[in-house]
Length: 402
Image: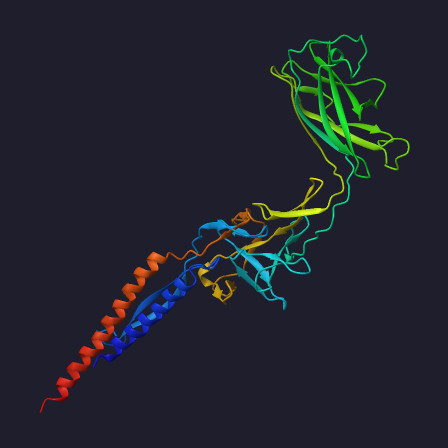
């Protein structure tokens, strides 16, 4: 009699209910991927099937919704890829759960103590290592370069050579750009560049530049000139102009002389108002104040001085066959022969997802769908039980034949 078919149906439906129940149980698990039971019929030599079997339990790797995190090192993946983690024994696992924090040694870890891997400092190499963040105070850095993006008004009236340039007389200069620069001790200084339009020769327009540090003109002699052609494009100087400012803090300060390379390659002379955006490097000393994660996986430390430094970069991994990964629990998977070897790289490169810092990827379980699937699985279970009951009744009838 055909009890086997009904029994296989009961087993398959029971396993399906297990899968659905596991999905529902993990509906709030960060980074969890729902699974689906796949079935296959069973045939032997007879024309009538011998029932059903569970062919595979397939996980759905669709991206879950992005939700608010509760820490600066929380990370959400927006597309393909996995975080690469190492446990204390060196074993490597992969996860979509971005709930990370710092342990007592400043390693980036998850709730299970597994350490996130990546690239230390600002570099990106081939072999990720366990990310340990340097969170100490930042030392001062002297200003050595100053990029200026500006437009000097083409319609400005040229200023005659007399009276001489005087910072207290606005009639002796055309415009002024101000920036803060730092000496070797981290002391901030106000650097003003005064632009003075002069009569040009040969159809070119000329601006003089005067350098005033903390209210005192510090570069004497022949002023630096900026020359523009008839299209408003700078033609000289095309390379950075190096200026040295001795004793930036005064004669009693131990700070080194400041040498700054001023880059005017992005200065134009078009019609319109004067505008400027100075971008000097350098910073004062500062204490650590916080962390943030960029879309490219860079972990950026902020300091009280306003300085920001990349102190690590997250590494991601992707697989040619995600379905071949082996689930090992703890929101993690391990590599298998079916998944293929991982392809590693920085977020946003090599077909890897970008990262949303301060967010988390929720489970991709759709509870409504799972409840409907549960009803269907329950009915399937009842129907298979009914076939066994019917087969039993047929057998009882057969045994009662005299």
